Length: 130
Image (cartoon, rainbow, N blue to C red; front, side, top):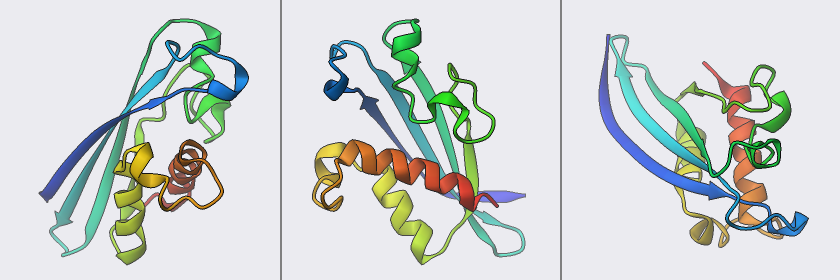
């Protein structure tokens, strides 16, 4: 049994203006994070993703941050469902950055675009599953 300490949601639009793909072609990713306290006093983040595409075309599906089965299971047309990770100081900051809008994240992403940084963060979280 667990208790939800907090729930946060943000929807981000993934586009690819560098490949010449029109900005009306996109993948919206709704990110929901539940901060949970379990009976054994352990805390976790339950991170869930829901993808919505502007068009049902192969080109549009390439905008999915997990495109191509990179995460070891998602098909090229599916969005990874999410991960549960242990809550600690490091993952707290990762979740904070995960939920940030691209404009805000750009202040922290260095020379990498906020979009690329976010994709790396989402993929990195997959390695921390608990």
